[in-house]
Length: 282
Image (tube, rainbow, N blue to C red; front, top):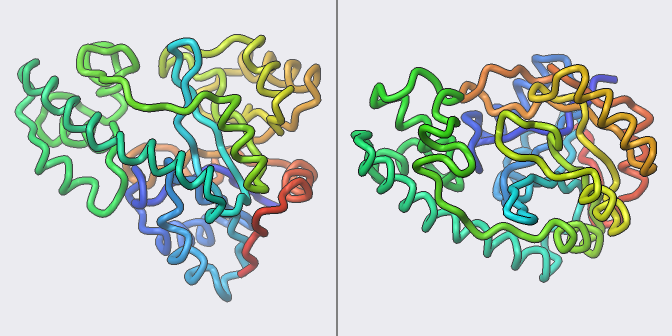
């Protein structure tokens, strides 16, 4: 089985609609794909309808914005009950703050000489939840940077960069507990992605494991071989599962669906822990 547990649609910062994501996952030869948009479940209904009759299995999920000790991190949540009140309220809080932050970042970019505006960013985001990748695309359109990746540097949008503005981010221990209380399964996304900024310590990961973290996303395009080896050893030490995923964003990034995958046994172990929702078989 080919299993990709991290992909985004235009319900957040991907470029594919949920239905297009499903079609592209089928075309890529995947057996299982997880829809993990940032802090939202807005793409679920369309993706669920699109998967019918395809033979693809859809794993409903989300990617949560977290912060500990001033360091931003992301938590993947799979198969939770999207209607569970406490977790739904926290996702809404994070989503709402994205708009305040987005406007503030655009204003900083303009102050730094970038000829972009909020209307342009809203057009790029469409119905999606506005995030820095949409602002990065605006910088590309304006000729300020050559690519979305080039916008995520200290010069512009990287964590702590000249145009960065902090947003509300959930404490990760609380996030793990919220996901578990909603019947879901939490996995730490790209924990060693140093190119995105400072990463959390092994001690923080141990604290998350004690709180109920299920796994680490180890095989990811932002991890080199030594990082993957270190994270595998840490996962073994803490009794955590090891996943692999593409972190697909459509045409916004060059990574392909299925570029990294998760072993079937690990996927089955994740599913076995979930009580909030079930995979959707097409």
